[in-house]
Length: 320
Ligand SMILES: Cc1cc2nc3c(=O)[nH]c(=O)nc-3n(C[C@H](O)[C@H](O)[C@H](O)COP(=O)(O)O)c2cc1C
Image 1 (cartoon, rainbow, N blue to C red):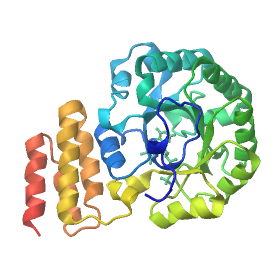
Image 2: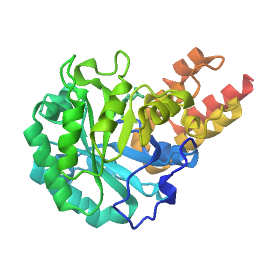
Image 3: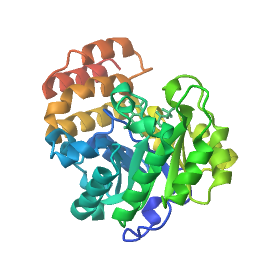
């Protein structure tokens, strides 16, 4: 672990202390409960759920509720909600606090997602274009729960926007406990370099903790955010895909890759069998860069059952 202050040291019942450490960033379609558990065990100080629709929760949508299934070993977890209606978000945050409060470290509001199906509806990153509504959402959620509320957003919306400093200051005034900032604009999606120095500028502009996100692929990237930009916490996103060892700054052996890939596959089959096909991409990531990687990727794409994956892992070990 890179940071000396970890969430594990924070008393669980205290909901006012700021978050510190190295976190698994929220990732839709990636952060299932088993992957979160693995990252936590390998050193992540905090893990985030996938983004969860407040509206979906309000309709008792089972698929949405499934995203909330928490692994007992990962508690407390950060739950990320998205939506654009202040009342629905506040109501669902309150319901979450009542049902899962002891297992939740914080509630994060997504104001950074650039995907058309989200931002096109005025949710996610689109809220950066409507700071009044964004502030109304944050005030409503902060007022509805005792849990710390944080907000994750981008450098801005338009390609060359630079709105994060003002947005962070406004969020602070709304009472959020911390801000998470990704140094790309929504129109950049995931392209180009993340603006690392933006984190330092936000850090200077607010008194609440700043969680850095953007181009974190190595322990050096993590260190740079802490040491050069004064970040209070750093999120690992794509850098953790297939590489939960980034949280322990270690290099896995092939056997270790197989062991973790199998734990992930078997665990997902146990708790969310309908999502087993999502292991195809995880398996490609776990074995990216090892010999036979292209063949493994091709074979993983044909895996359907747990036994298919097991046979593939045995084959990988046999190739040693
Ligand atoms: C597959 C994928 C899914 C993501 N899902 C979410 C999400 O649900 N909520 C969110 O706030 N950010 C999401 N993000 C953004 C990441 O949390 C992170 O801010 C971004 O990838 C920048 O970090 P990186 O350059 O180190 O990958 C997602 C990113 C990826 C690649």
